[in-house]
Image 1: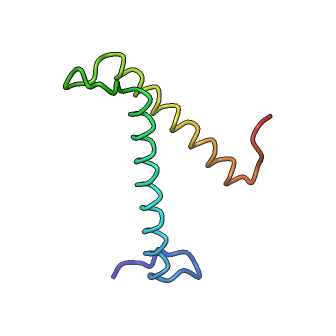
Image 2: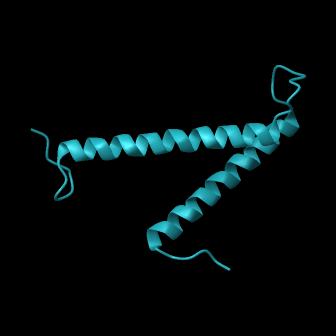
Image 3: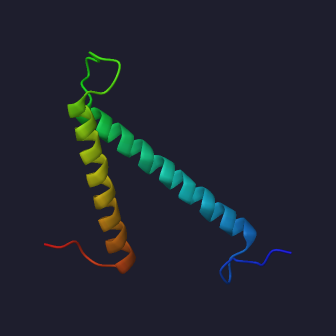
Length: 85
């Protein structure tokens, strides 16, 4: 039999609910990231069927910055801190 790896006071139904909420958050985060970086970096006229070098570079930087900011906000929220001034 598998060991029960749930934290104390959490039953299976609550754990599945928490996992579903986390999954919804991750999907929403990915969708916002994709939409934000696409709108910022990709030419709206679609001159080519593939991304050019400038668009690729812009998307790489945009995604990197998005994850950095997301990580900083997560750390501040988990620490209960305020943003640096």
